[in-house]
Length: 138
Image (cartoon, rainbow, N blue to C red):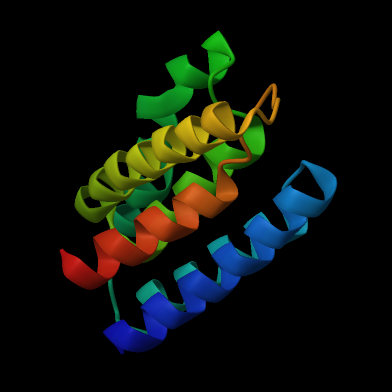
Protein backbone atom coordinates (compact mmCIF):
# COMPACT_ATOMS: atom_id res chain seq x y z
CA UNK A 1 0.00 0.00 0.00
CA UNK A 2 2.95 2.31 0.65
CA UNK A 3 4.03 2.04 -3.00
CA UNK A 4 0.53 2.89 -4.20
CA UNK A 5 0.53 5.94 -1.94
CA UNK A 6 3.88 7.16 -3.33
CA UNK A 7 2.89 6.48 -6.95
CA UNK A 8 -0.39 8.35 -6.49
CA UNK A 9 1.42 11.27 -4.84
CA UNK A 10 4.03 11.45 -7.61
CA UNK A 11 1.23 11.39 -10.20
CA UNK A 12 -0.50 14.34 -8.52
CA UNK A 13 2.85 16.15 -8.34
CA UNK A 14 3.52 15.47 -12.02
CA UNK A 15 0.21 17.11 -12.97
CA UNK A 16 1.00 20.01 -10.64
CA UNK A 17 4.49 20.45 -12.12
CA UNK A 18 3.11 20.43 -15.67
CA UNK A 19 0.44 22.97 -14.70
CA UNK A 20 3.00 25.15 -12.91
CA UNK A 21 5.38 25.14 -15.88
CA UNK A 22 2.61 25.80 -18.40
CA UNK A 23 0.48 28.40 -16.57
CA UNK A 24 2.79 29.54 -13.74
CA UNK A 25 0.03 28.45 -11.35
CA UNK A 26 -1.04 25.25 -9.68
CA UNK A 27 -4.73 24.59 -10.14
CA UNK A 28 -6.81 24.21 -7.00
CA UNK A 29 -8.50 21.20 -8.60
CA UNK A 30 -5.14 19.38 -8.60
CA UNK A 31 -4.64 20.32 -4.94
CA UNK A 32 -8.15 19.14 -4.09
CA UNK A 33 -7.59 15.86 -5.95
CA UNK A 34 -4.43 15.29 -3.92
CA UNK A 35 -6.10 16.06 -0.59
CA UNK A 36 -9.12 13.87 -1.33
CA UNK A 37 -6.94 11.00 -2.56
CA UNK A 38 -4.67 11.07 0.46
CA UNK A 39 -7.61 11.43 2.85
CA UNK A 40 -9.36 8.43 1.33
CA UNK A 41 -6.18 6.34 1.37
CA UNK A 42 -5.13 7.19 4.90
CA UNK A 43 -8.47 7.42 6.68
CA UNK A 44 -10.51 4.73 4.94
CA UNK A 45 -8.08 2.23 3.43
CA UNK A 46 -5.28 2.40 6.01
CA UNK A 47 -7.57 3.17 8.98
CA UNK A 48 -5.45 6.06 10.22
CA UNK A 49 -7.08 8.68 12.40
CA UNK A 50 -8.59 11.80 10.88
CA UNK A 51 -6.80 14.12 13.37
CA UNK A 52 -3.46 12.60 12.32
CA UNK A 53 -4.30 13.18 8.65
CA UNK A 54 -5.37 16.77 9.33
CA UNK A 55 -2.22 17.48 11.36
CA UNK A 56 -0.02 16.21 8.52
CA UNK A 57 -2.02 18.37 6.10
CA UNK A 58 -1.92 21.58 8.17
CA UNK A 59 1.53 21.55 9.84
CA UNK A 60 3.55 22.24 6.65
CA UNK A 61 1.32 25.26 5.98
CA UNK A 62 1.87 26.59 9.50
CA UNK A 63 5.63 26.13 9.31
CA UNK A 64 6.08 27.62 5.82
CA UNK A 65 3.53 30.44 6.14
CA UNK A 66 6.29 32.96 6.91
CA UNK A 67 7.98 32.16 3.58
CA UNK A 68 4.65 32.75 1.84
CA UNK A 69 4.16 36.11 3.59
CA UNK A 70 7.73 37.14 2.68
CA UNK A 71 7.09 36.29 -0.98
CA UNK A 72 9.55 33.40 -1.17
CA UNK A 73 6.86 30.81 -1.72
CA UNK A 74 3.69 30.98 -3.77
CA UNK A 75 0.27 29.93 -2.50
CA UNK A 76 0.15 26.98 -4.89
CA UNK A 77 3.56 25.77 -3.72
CA UNK A 78 2.47 26.05 -0.11
CA UNK A 79 -0.70 24.04 -0.79
CA UNK A 80 1.29 21.48 -2.79
CA UNK A 81 3.68 20.90 0.11
CA UNK A 82 0.64 20.40 2.34
CA UNK A 83 -0.61 17.76 -0.10
CA UNK A 84 2.77 16.04 0.21
CA UNK A 85 2.38 16.14 4.00
CA UNK A 86 -1.07 14.64 3.77
CA UNK A 87 0.31 11.67 1.83
CA UNK A 88 3.64 10.92 3.52
CA UNK A 89 3.33 12.49 6.96
CA UNK A 90 5.00 15.46 8.57
CA UNK A 91 8.44 13.95 9.24
CA UNK A 92 9.08 12.92 5.62
CA UNK A 93 7.66 16.29 4.50
CA UNK A 94 10.52 18.02 6.32
CA UNK A 95 12.98 15.96 4.24
CA UNK A 96 11.01 16.81 1.10
CA UNK A 97 11.24 20.53 1.89
CA UNK A 98 15.00 20.19 2.43
CA UNK A 99 15.63 18.27 -0.81
CA UNK A 100 13.29 20.53 -2.80
CA UNK A 101 15.19 23.57 -1.52
CA UNK A 102 18.52 22.04 -2.55
CA UNK A 103 17.21 21.21 -6.01
CA UNK A 104 15.73 24.72 -6.38
CA UNK A 105 19.13 26.21 -5.48
CA UNK A 106 20.83 24.00 -8.08
CA UNK A 107 18.25 25.02 -10.66
CA UNK A 108 18.82 28.67 -9.79
CA UNK A 109 22.57 28.17 -10.28
CA UNK A 110 22.00 26.60 -13.69
CA UNK A 111 19.83 29.56 -14.72
CA UNK A 112 22.51 31.95 -13.49
CA UNK A 113 25.30 30.15 -15.38
CA UNK A 114 23.33 29.89 -18.62
CA UNK A 115 22.28 33.53 -18.42
CA UNK A 116 18.54 32.81 -18.36
CA UNK A 117 16.57 35.42 -16.52
CA UNK A 118 13.77 34.18 -14.34
CA UNK A 119 12.13 36.30 -11.71
CA UNK A 120 10.75 33.21 -9.94
CA UNK A 121 11.60 29.55 -10.09
CA UNK A 122 8.56 27.32 -10.48
CA UNK A 123 8.81 25.14 -7.39
CA UNK A 124 6.45 22.29 -8.32
CA UNK A 125 9.25 20.41 -10.11
CA UNK A 126 11.73 20.74 -7.20
CA UNK A 127 8.92 19.64 -4.84
CA UNK A 128 8.28 16.58 -7.01
CA UNK A 129 11.98 15.67 -7.12
CA UNK A 130 12.34 16.33 -3.37
CA UNK A 131 9.34 14.08 -2.76
CA UNK A 132 10.84 11.31 -4.84
CA UNK A 133 14.14 11.51 -2.96
CA UNK A 134 12.50 11.92 0.45
CA UNK A 135 9.85 9.25 0.05
CA UNK A 136 11.94 6.63 -1.69
CA UNK A 137 15.23 6.95 0.18
CA UNK A 138 14.09 8.00 3.67
